[in-house]
Length: 225
Image (cartoon, rainbow, N blue to C red; front, side):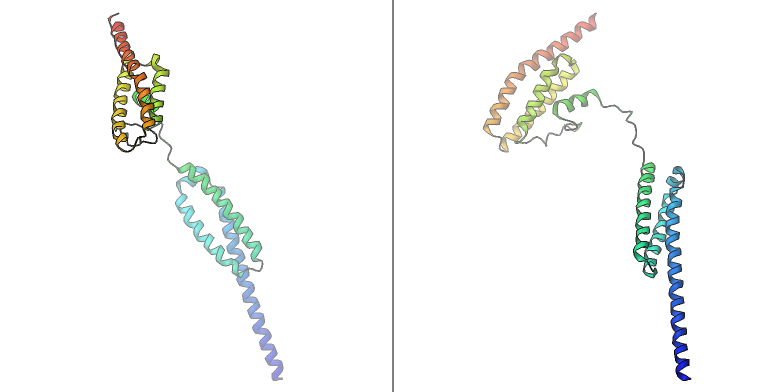
């Protein structure tokens, strides 16, 4: 009799344990379902509403995601549950990318157009290399020959289109580049590059002088007409 009671007690305990385990599994399933449904609901939110309330959406997502991740341990089919979580997580990240792109501040349309002076400097030296600060520190012994080449060849190719103001700017930039060359020479400019630069300068100096004077006289003539 005592043996039967003992067996019955063990069976009841086992049944209770199984029932408790099933309840945990059921609750875990509901937690994962809640997470998946939340992600689906985010996808149904209007873009403008999501953009304006993304901080709240993100906070709720983090909470539900953490709960779902913890719940997996109590589920019977962990692998399947993990697949559902991964799929929803990927969906959420795609939505996040979409909505964050929408809420990113629009790039202001540049109503300030690049000045003709800056356009000229970009053509002579490269995009953004020389700005209002007139900083030539990027010119060194390794690249100064190519800098002279670009500057002089660009000027030669476009000499017929330059205005008087352009030639004044070219003269200013040329003198600034020469000043930088004096510094670079002390830092180890090779004799070969020095000779090549001298040849370029020998050819360029008279062209600069003639064209600058021509542009000025042409402008004066037009002013008198």
